[in-house]
Image (cartoon, rainbow, N blue to C red; front, side, top):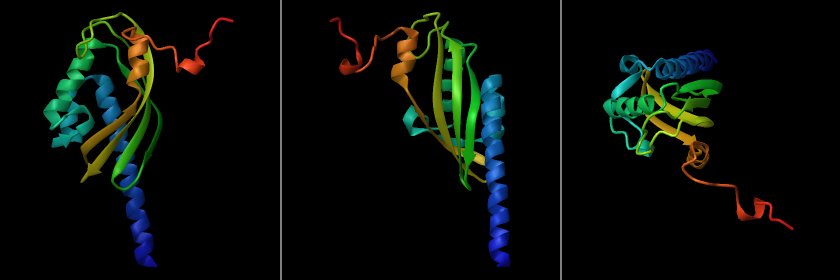
Length: 157
């Protein structure tokens, strides 16, 4: 019984630490201070979804975002963690005023939601992955036209 209680305390502490790491990650990204990532993210960080193979690649992706959307901001809407991961539901807002990943500036504001998940080992982020809706993002920027599924579009009588 003592071992179980000890494990629960340990798990509770790990979970709280992972929640704090997730909050610090969002704070660092919002401050646009890439040096802060050195304390949060291992050099071997990977995000297969974004084709990121190390912390330098992550900094490059974020730098491109800051140039294309200088006012980008993430607001934590919800955050949960377990012993080795943290999931953060964020609202991302910004204005697309510079070139970003091949998309010329549109000057349009956007609001979108994403859920990044970070895997944490020994107090550092080792892997990232995210769920977001690029279709809605591109629609808000005006680079694609999307009105919905054909059966959702109202047809004139």
